[in-house]
Image (cartoon, rainbow, N blue to C red; front, side, top):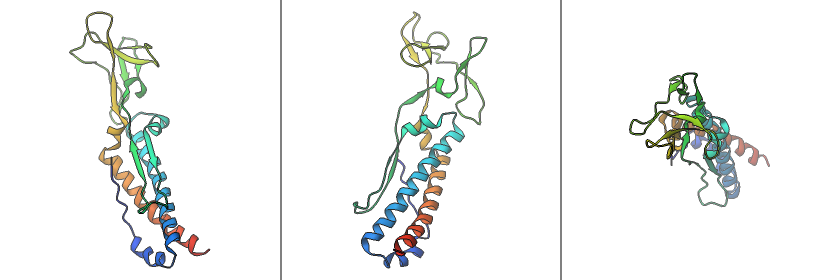
Length: 189
């Protein structure tokens, strides 16, 4: 799990926070954290899709958000990425006329030919065996058993430094901005 520390001009806002009651302080902080976590989740999804060839829904399905609550002693929110390695076919896998299979895993590298593992027999093939279409490779000399060829997992993509940096920047920026807005809103009541 990635820990994102939010730093910003909270000291400027601290004086204004003291003008609010304790309950309103927690409410303002909780609302700002929740807005920041929503924006950070969106930014993480977008950053993963900028680098990897995946759909928005596939990435969103792997990200789980726990929001902050004013009832917590210290309001905190988390984003957790979970899941297994993704079928290589979900990265835009397609068979060519020559029988090879190409995929676009990372957008900056272009399409790559799936070679399969050398210790397995035969070349990879596209087939619907159990569930959706996928790329398979035989593991022995016979027709079966076969093993699905997989790419990286979303948790692996999630911890990459460029994606983590984008998340930290978004979290800090949105939290600082929204905390000021919430203080003005709740202070005007």
